[in-house]
Length: 122
Image (cartoon, rainbow, N blue to C red; front, side, top):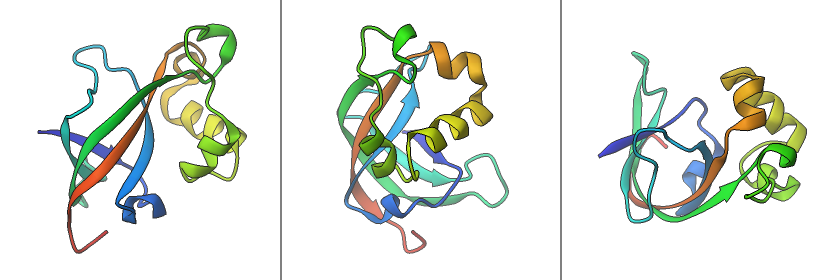
């Protein structure tokens, strides 16, 4: 089971169904039906397993439309549902975490997950 890591305990992680945006993986991309372990700070001594979830939907998304013509751009509403105040905050957060080149050129997946098992510390 692969780990789906989070660097913040977003409010959305308390929901039975939630979405997250992830860059397409070069080795083995995420897939519908995959069961993942949801983890807060996966590479830290403060690692916290929040539970398991199943990917129930995967949709292509782009951040900068000019470079991702085959995928719709992430909308303002999707950014808000993901936990940001607006698209600009999401863009800046992703650019700081992954770099402007990645954010401007790499396609993303909008993953919708359904919680299977909750841990007490969500």
